[in-house]
Image 1 (cartoon, helix red, strand yellow):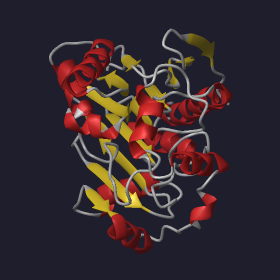
Image 2 (tube, one colour; image 1 turned 135 degrees about the vertical axis):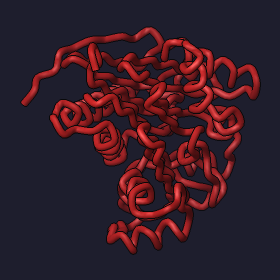
Image 3 (tube, one colour; image 1 turned 180 degrees about the horizontal axis):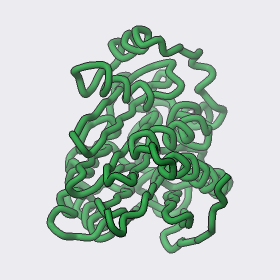
Image 4 (cartoon, rainbow, N blue to C red; image 1 turned 45 degrees about the vertical axis):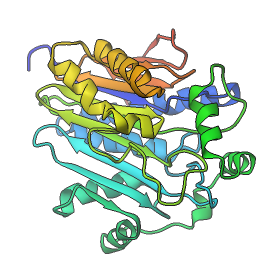
Length: 321
């Protein structure tokens, strides 16, 4: 594959991240990037395994709105969405509105590999998890004090939560959270993407956002690259943001140009805010967000780059154990 370098890129959600949560968010995406990159460095390491493991790391981290730490719906419950996709054959698996599952991205992969479907939702998702032997956990194990605090403050006021976390300029003082995602390319030139979320605080019971929707929360194709999105789900769905960004890349744009144009189109067309990460089929990455902050981290050639503010671009070497 010539100059191809195995590469992974992670995001931890685009929103008005409060100062007290900034370090944990950056540390979390850096740790997830290392988890995924360790897989890519192996001779048998695949992009699909890398994004799944990276997103599992984020789902297990209460700093993020995925798995443990997910926000609560209008009835104070956790409902989780996730998607995973590979770019060689365009296989994908998705889970929506699943309950009591610690790592929904793993269940999404089972949908991809163990069924003839792309998405399974609600009660059916939990029945499928039981069929696959995936243990359920008490919902209390997924709920954090931060999620409860936001639920108490907004108390079914979904629109207010959307405005405060995505549309206001200036970091929030509220302990909200947002979607996580990963894109990667392996030594064989195969790309993959994964996205996982608990949605937006005070959403209606049964609400499904962009994250598990193919072409919205994530999309990939070996011919062009891979994309994962974050932000206001309804806006992302209206413009099918992941597919849009990949289409820009197919037209010749760099991943950076494509992420910037995609978000600008979404802002102009439907007034939505969010973030995007992308990687092309040569391992070149791009990331952009028009919210206050978005933690991100990428590793290639044993070099990590990361940040959270719009102008951040920190670098550090990584050691291989």
